[in-house]
Image 1 (cartoon, rainbow, N blue to C red):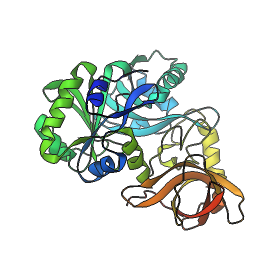
Image 2 (cartoon, rainbow, N blue to C red):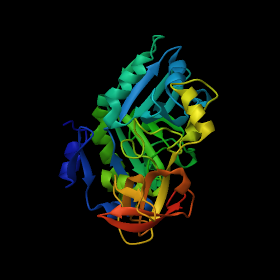
Image 3 (cartoon, rainbow, N blue to C red):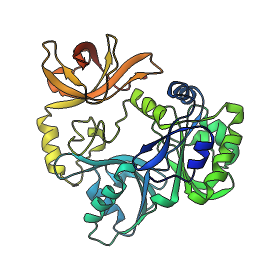
Image 4 (cartoon, rainbow, N blue to C red):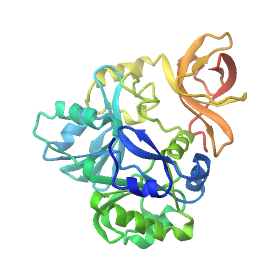
Length: 359
């Protein structure tokens, strides 16, 4: 089990620690609902240092990224971030990721913790033009400071004008007295805020400075449990649940990051799928009757026929209702359609709704 540079901090704060993607991670401190509310209404801090970071450098770095990712990275400029995915050769997804353009010949890819080795090997497989690749995951810490008060809470720690930073942009600057910190206006909560990347050696100093600056804003540490409920309220996919090696980006509603203006892994088959239409789609649903949907529960029609499966589900703290995501036959995927979730052999009524759940 790996630790992050901040594991001891979490333990000293009384976090409930759990194994996650090979790391010892805090799942909650005070409780998921309370932590969820802190992020939606104020500001909270997640240690997400388990995520993977790769640096790709050289004349052919963009060419390699274009060939292995679904989105069009040629649209990036210095300081711009892009959400993308790595399609596999069989119609599924190796991983979803963020692509950061540092300069014309230097990019940072941010990948899911559970897929670091898998993604590295996958990209390396296509690296036939000597792109310099560096896996900096083990020496890089990542904090997500999320919530509507994040910019105000952090502003005293940097000269960068945080309030004016546009979504999915980043800068390299000085933060809490530490140079060369990547400050990124990104996140996985839908509540606004920033993600900051820095060398592990600065983790304690930066963590302490953030919480000192955040005292007037009642800033709290937040665990992975609330991260999951926050992302689910926004309808954001979680790799391993809502997308995986057997789900296509077209089925998953990720056509918007699948650009056929270039060729990439399996692009011809995915284009054919887009043009022909898919048999199943990833949908959001909310429960009409009482019951909480969970991963892998069956989705059934009025006659009890299985039409799909739940990929994610929870009692949404901001909405006071149970919600979920799942793949379902296209014929039943229209907004407003009544469906049923098989919960302990009972058909519990739900209806298809549009993302995001939290509007």
